[in-house]
Every structure is written in structure tokens, then in C-alpha cells.
Length: 54
Image 1 (cartoon, rainbow, N blue to C red):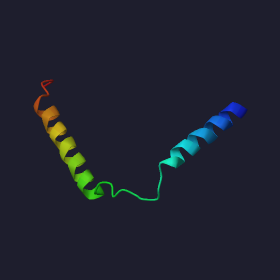
Image 2: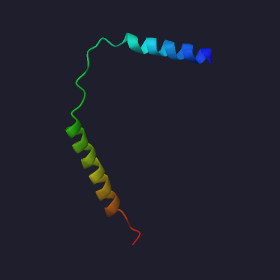
Image 3: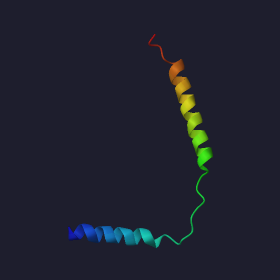
Image 4: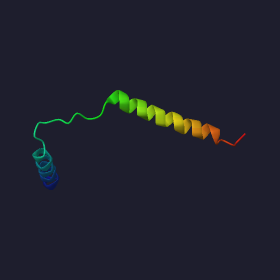
């Protein structure tokens, strides 16, 4: 159990070294949602057009 806690402490220390307080802007959530919706609609269209189980 002690080794687990020391491993967690070491991992947290290692991850905390790279943070300097600056946050990257990331991606635009509405744009990301629109892209994902478009991809899913294209996949749905392809799936329904290739369905030959009738």
C-alpha cells in the first residue's frame, strides 16, 4: 500500500512539473459538435443506403 501512495505522489509531481498556469484555447465546442454531427449523419446515410436486408 505504501508503494501505491508513493507511486501516486511521484506521478502527481511529474505531471505538475509541466504546468505553468497557461491554458491553451482548445477547440470550439459548437464547431466540434457540428463536425461530429455531420460525420455521424454521413455514416447513417451510408449505412441506410447500403442496407440490403430487405
